Figure 1 (cartoon, rainbow, N blue to C red):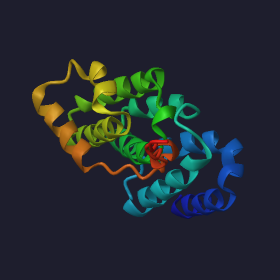
Figure 2: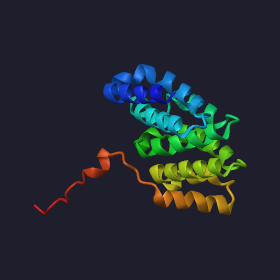
Figure 3: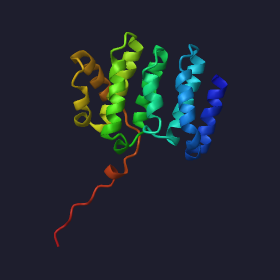
Figure 4: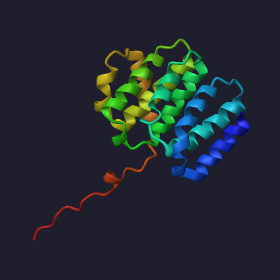
Length: 180
């Protein structure tokens, strides 16, 4: 499984956008395989899913991800939430519209109340990264039910999150007009 994950990662890195027709099929399989306990397998699967993500988008894999977040296995939930946190850092904020944001935040809020601490931390990290991506104002209507302790954890991850995607609109600033 580890070797297959490495092969998939290299294929996705090599083909880039041309890997898109296969990306959604691979994502569901990888998310399901996160139930493995061996760290070398999980690491290879992480590499594979991170390499595949640029060939797809959050909307295309929405059903697979929300299904994995509802999985009964805590490893699957935690790794899926960590994958979401990593993919939020590589997503342009405009792609994460209100409808899509609501779907992901609702699924992550359910995992935020899990008994497994790794799952809770992963969900908090994903929510914090999403908050950093779309802004606190846009995500706060979905977080009204969250208790203070969990909200503090989300804000902590919000501070740590680093968005790596290049936003073209923000980079180009207009020069102020000079007097004629």
